[in-house]
Length: 281
Image (cartoon, rainbow, N blue to C red; front, top):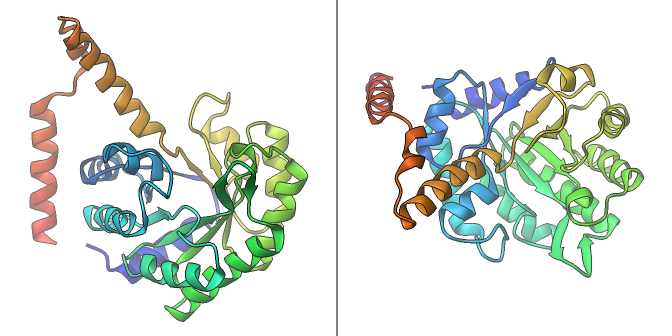
């Protein structure tokens, strides 16, 4: 099993060229299955984590300490580098944010993202100068811890009701200058938007969220210059979709939806092999 330092080196190398998919597990089993499929890195999902605990996807519901425990569980479940969806850092002020980033680094993550969403409808995004200061504080906290964790700067306007491409680019370029290693504007969808963001922050890498049909393949995204693709809560929602259909069928007296269930024998074989492999490493 690779060390934390090795995972972080691998993760940084993945961002240097090409394009890779970084899927988002929501528990240990889904993390290990994604590793089994050959993915090179994983990312946590705040929504997937929250839904698994019966909570809405909001940092007032799934608070810092339970999220840190969830992130650590995903890190420990896999041999792969893990990027933490660390929401808005669970603090407004840069100094408090920096302390929370330090705690996140201690979970063993290879990367973490900080977003500029406030969660408040009246002011969806942090004021520009404060948002930049928060990224700068996160960068300083990582550097004090050794500097090898990759920092992702996220601007949330397109999913927080402020879909302004020029403002998104202004923020992302400022976050890059403040020390973000990778830039991310979840919610951009068109080829023109994606290319504009990639060009604006080059040569730093861009993460693209594809959480549903967008008419793009991995090859298309790579051709636009995207370095990595995440799916957010889409895998967790797909699993919930299967569960909901089966549970609703059961409630109405039918069992038809079980026809699409995974094989228990196949899952047992996979996880038995995984346990044996991990015990040898």
